[in-house]
Image (tube, rainbow over all chains, first blue to last red):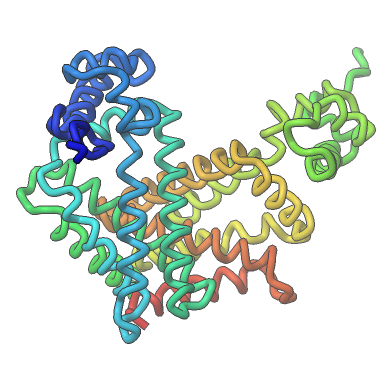
Length: 200
Length: 200
């Protein structure tokens, strides 16, 4: 009988490095804010987090991915929620449901999100990356809407409007002094868009 | 009595090089389409247009500016139209008026616009530039709306929605087989956005 002495493969190595990803993210954002994104190295991020560079690269392809890696996860939630929305739901409300579905991802991350935004705002190439990511989210939403039978023009317009609502809601959540959580800002911003489009 | 033998300064040198800017633009788009944007030099553009490199640089800062130079002019029209819109006009309709105000710029330019879009679509760095330009147009529109008293959230949402309408309308104008002109596509797309936001 062979006794397994090697633990099962765990890509996060979480057994030995609890919450390595979160620690790396926090260390990276601190350093980007302190020294600037361009001036920060992966070695410094790993050191600040008390981890190795190898561990960093197990979690992130590069230092930019610390800022943008989460958006791919968002994209999946957007797309799945729209695909699963009841047929009777209008495109704009399916997108509204998708925006609400991603909100829990940001629970407890207000400070990190705020710091991330400041880092991106300070660096034109990161701003470009942000625009590209948002455009790819809009494309994915439009595709998901077409998948449930929404016409071409309506799919594109609704997707762009949805991303605009998300951007505005997120920005308000980060920067307004109010205690409300992201879902409340999403709801308000979507309602405001509807009122505005009604010519109000 | 001194006779003026030097003609008055004319930055476009239009007296000797009729429509130099248009000829350079057409030559550039042809070459970008034939060889790719990165592979085309300013010398080649000037040669194809039958003009000098010096003339090229009198009209465009670089070869990328051939594709994006016009957007600064659009921005001015957007902003002025919104600023001049009657106070009683809703933000979305002021933006609609601004979209209509830029439409004449594209009259007779269907073929050029179509070629330009293909060149941009084939080159990721040009796509990034396009996204940045559109984002700056949205910012300028939001600013113009705030200038007439629209609130922060409403200004941002309306500006983003307006840019989305313009993008979609422009894309349809370029790619749909219909004979309609751009203003018609803008009208239809704006109406569709309104209907969509109403949950239709």
